[in-house]
Image (cartoon, rainbow, N blue to C red; front, top):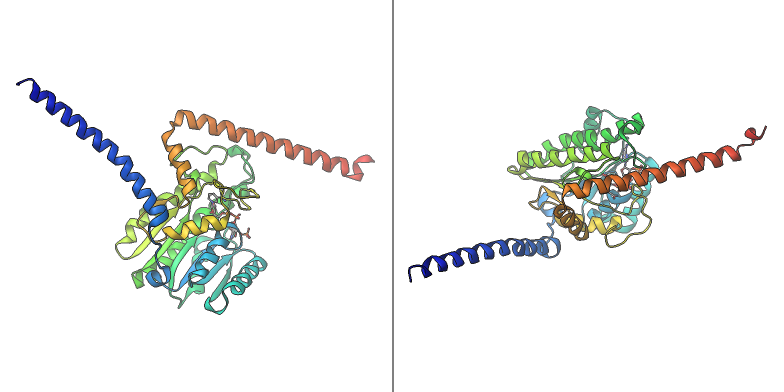
Length: 330
Ligand SMILES: NC(=O)c1ccc[n+]([C@@H]2O[C@H](COP(=O)([O-])OP(=O)(O)OC[C@H]3O[C@@H](n4cnc5c(N)ncnc54)[C@H](OP(=O)(O)O)[C@@H]3O)[C@@H](O)[C@H]2O)c1
């Protein structure tokens, strides 16, 4: 009898530990299903205000997000560098959503303008508007995988300016307006390359700018959450856009429209960092489960292969150009 009691206690404790360790992933899965598919999106206009700012709205994810926001009845401040593309985007939005949506265009090259100037331009552009949502989406990456020393200096500077400086200064211009109203939502479009899942060699500068955005969002979310501003970094993996050059979409490489629909479901919710599109979230789950010692060499090898193919293509293009140049035959 005396030996039976400790045995029973041991089995009871082990069973409890087993139950608890089983509960954690089950609860995690239930939460994942809730936030991905069932949780109702916030009514952004009602919660935060009637105008949304979208940077980099003339293509890809930014353009799709602008359409999604317009479909929810928000007026738009559209920020882009190319006046023709900006007008085309505005026309398309007005054609689709008509008089229910107001628009204001801001032409600014975020790579060629100082932070302070960007801030001032934005302050002037949004004066008097009930700004509820800011989407810092504009982003740049380099054309192909390359070592740090191979990145063109001007390109490197533009990436840092658009991805870091512009996002920071636009946020700096908008936060006081939101703080005054005690409400607002800010979405910074980050990237799966930010370092949380794996390294991102040969795209180092781009990945590092996204790491900045992740920490920027996390920290200012804490600074302003208490006064009603919800700040979030959303993480896409591959999306079929001009940036990635994927021409067709698939389950794991969604179109900008597919991604933007998922994106809006998360705006204003508690997560300061999120992967809004569910197949991307599955990919991140798998990536997180693998050890760095396995992921890092594989990713490096994969990008080295990309770089090799890019160099080969460039040299073929160069040779064709030389052969087609009539002056070379002389
Ligand atoms: N696509 C992906 O797989 C992926 C994955 C992770 C993260 N992201 C992030 O998602 C965001 C959108 O990317 P995307 O794939 O939609 O790229 P995209 O199709 O190349 O669109 C980028 C947008 O940013 C604008 N932009 C670029 N440089 C600018 C500048 N100097 N001044 C003002 N606007 C500028 C572009 O304007 P123009 O129309 O004039 O070129 C365009 O509207 C970026 O922050 C990117 O880092 C994308």
